Length: 182
Image (cartoon, rainbow, N blue to C red; front, top):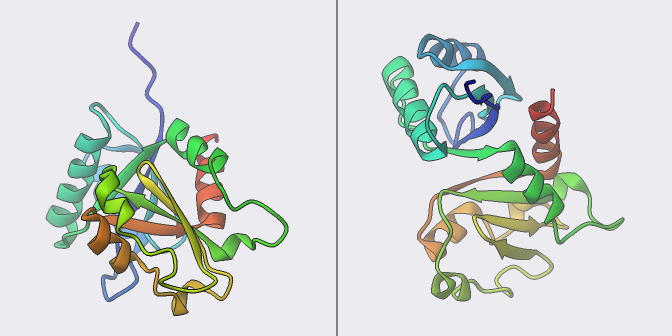
């Protein structure tokens, strides 16, 4: 009996921010035309739920990247997490509490786990009042004053860690997890 395929979350880096415009209807059509199933998007910022046909997360990331490049002419990095991985991210949140607004808590999803040496380079005092914690392939970042003013931005994390990533706020993370369950 064939194994059941489960939907996954695909995070497109830099979509509809920073000049890379991708209408979600066009994105869904490109991915469906490329053979992916159950394609759903959330918001306009490159959050996609998709059921892979075969292969692991790395293969799916590359497949989606190729489909976007071929179908839309855009080079976009894609990071994939399974439902179980996203549930672990939600469970591992170190910044729960009444003083943490979900929109001010972000998760940076990294393509791979950074080395301990690279993690040690991160400066916890770089942006006073902001806090972060690296956990495997994720970074949890709490921005009490908002992420727009923080010096703990994606570019800083990527440069220090030597790993590409993409960030989503906590509301988006939990909504995508719920979408994977339905």
